[in-house]
Image (cartoon, rainbow, N blue to C red):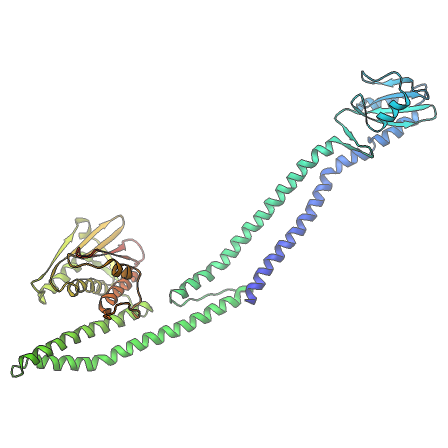
Length: 456
């Protein structure tokens, strides 16, 4: 948790630093943007400076040619009044400017506008100088004046700065998010792997090294537990074989002993058959465990699934399939020549488990069908029967992949669930998928799909 706190604090500090940098940059941008405006408003051409310059050369006789030219060049008009308010002379005064002003008139336009023009006044020894600026140049307030250019520019400046700040913050968020997700992805992947019961290895430096160490420690503990569980199952399986073989041997001898009572021979045969089921169950349990903990070596080679199915079916018929069961194969032309890179022994085991499931759960007999097809870059292998099928509850349970050490079956019938789990493990080892379809009294169908060109 300390590592995670440091990691988060680092990014929060980065964002705080970015905010301060943006404030500094905004201040520089504001000064740079309005430097020209401020220079003009309060520089040589500002109303105050122009009044001072013009008033220095203004009198009742007129104004200097140099000052007059400077006024015209900057589109400034001028009017000079004597002490009685009469207009003595003017420079480019627009229409509408009166020839005479009262004290009241002067009091009004001194703080506002004259004929719609922003004007500025300065008293001299002989009268009053009035300078008028273009109508779209300044906005006059009772206590000050501001150029319309600066007022018009400010909203665009503020919006532009805001847009740039938001863009920078978004980019910082986006790249920070990508970096965080990139750093978090191996952690999440490792946690998901651990959640699936698989060991994981995580190598990270910096602030997240503590989390990596914790994940690796949990993975090591899980690996030891898995190893211990697999070894225990393997050991129990090995220890059962010898006494089970003896039970099967004695049961078979009694079953074939002609001098024994028929009832005893019948019970001995039942013991032998049930011992065979126990042996198969133990074998499945051991193989499922080894596949689950990736301790079972997978020996892959190009295999003709069409030939494998035919060989399996021939062997099944040769060993004596009861008359109440029938089996047939359907192989499409596209699947005849396909070679699938797989472990032939495990694939054959999966097919055998599914066929035995159909036989075991249909004691009154059924027809079993094996179908092989190839389309859209995948191989589809299905094993189906027309037997009693599965209830919706049982089908849901099997599709939800129950673990073999968990049973909700009151009869503790693990043979069905464990057989399917073994098939699912074999299919997963070949990067395939498994789907079960069934309805009560309408049979059961298991579809195994494998990619042809993938890493099998």
